[in-house]
Image 1 (cartoon, chains in turn red, yellow):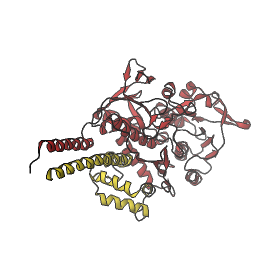
Image 2: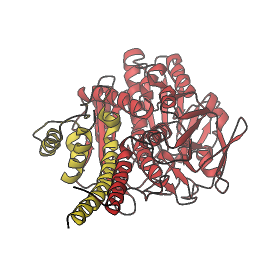
Image 3: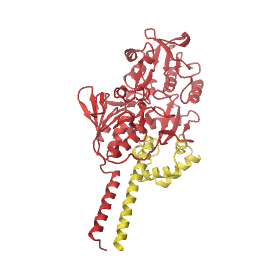
Image 4: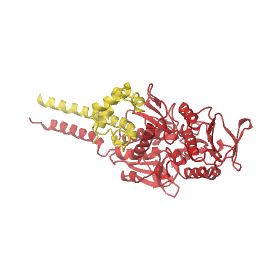
Length: 422
Length: 99
């Protein structure tokens, strides 16, 4: 068989095209620089996956003020004395091995027109695309009498894992047997819907073993338990009867920090030995400063196909900071899914291709109700042309609390941390 | 003509490879959602089934058994119901190709 020159060129051209398209599984794809603000579930995942899926073609710089990743999920077990801070801490060295430049600093400003990020310690970073994954910050005025200074020193939130987790554990250890621990839950939406109820359960679990005359009081601004309600209430009745009390429709009208007293509607007052107030939440401050919080000046609207902000081009927003759609919780697991949607879109767009066809995403969320037993909620979400919505017939809850899922919950943590950071 | 047939075959290969690349990317993206529990590209670090290298037919069968209840599960029976047969096949194909 002989080919003439023209046929040879056609054949060679097709082979080159085949080679380069196939090469996306391994070779370099895309070029340019992505800056990622935040090194949590969203930021770490998007940084790793952009490096991996671009075959090292796209440079990634991740900015976070803490030198290691500290997980919020599992931190309630640290409060209960079941795990240590070391158990929930992972180095960023794994990301460095993927070629991610990790900058330990805070982003203080974004200039969407010049495509630059200003850093607290001085200097700035230029980007082709920016990922903003700042998590949440607190609305201090949601609790009259609470300030950032009070929340940092005395009336803790411990809703960002780190020094506050250690400090709240210390308060619980120092509390006398027979004391009252009160947990104030903000009106939704807030980070990790079942988180407060897991915390209440695990602190009751600690008291039961070490301070059996003590009490856990959940004062919830929402009418009822907002997630896994039936499962939590059954666990509370079965395991902590008389020790854990839930009161719904309790929005704080006043805090007296000095006497550790919170006041509610109709003048009801509660004084606690350890007072743990989780204030109302909004997207991380940098998002507001950059003009990205275009939903009620609180959350960020995005194009769910790419996670690109609807306020500014070339800026993608992930996780708790987004205006999550109906039925989509603000969870760490969900945030990693946002990160993968964004990574896939960014790699395509920075290779001169169209955004990829929408993928399907999922959430699995485990909550400990005691040191041995766990309950879960799970769901699958598909893109419906506008947003991700739960797939009818998918998802659900544990049929009852069980020990098997306690093993799965720890396996979940180890695997998701590895998928983000190793 | 013989040359024309070759040229046609080559150009069809070109179309097929473009479609292959799109499908490969979508399969990779779809599977990445599962990676959160089952490990990057299916390389679990323990506690959940590693999916990397699992034969395609075996994974498809397992997902169908989760759906029907034939294979007992804590979570997977709920997640399996969120995916179409075509999506499961795509994801299974991706993991089967991972070493």
